[in-house]
Image (tube, rainbow, N blue to C red; front, side):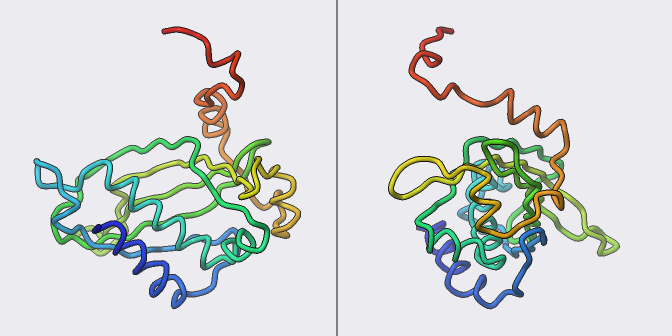
Length: 187
């Protein structure tokens, strides 16, 4: 219930009031660690990071206009892979923000970076965790939207994006098989 409230709050009240963004801009979504986010060690549960990243991604696509494109085309995004590295714990009641940005594309997917940030003792931004997300865009009527179509209809210049080579390699090596024959391998 807590995540539902947090999601609705951001989609209805935070995102629409936020500054409009360009397709390549970074969004900053603000949050606080609530008691319902904690694990037994009394810091934010690693699964909550992923759930809160969902909200921050919707904030980004709402503010950069992609959500409107998705609605008009009957599209929706799905995460097909993600990896996250943690540097420091987020503790009860701490405020933090998530910086989200689109890194670019490969032939199948959109790549995004999301960083959990808090100010350090000198009020400089300090990264607590960093994630990379690989997403596909699907049609509500069925099927995958080709990246070329996403680029064309969004009007984005793909040359203005650059996915680091190590992230593209991660995307290639972590893909699951897409056909029934490929899925029959055994452990």
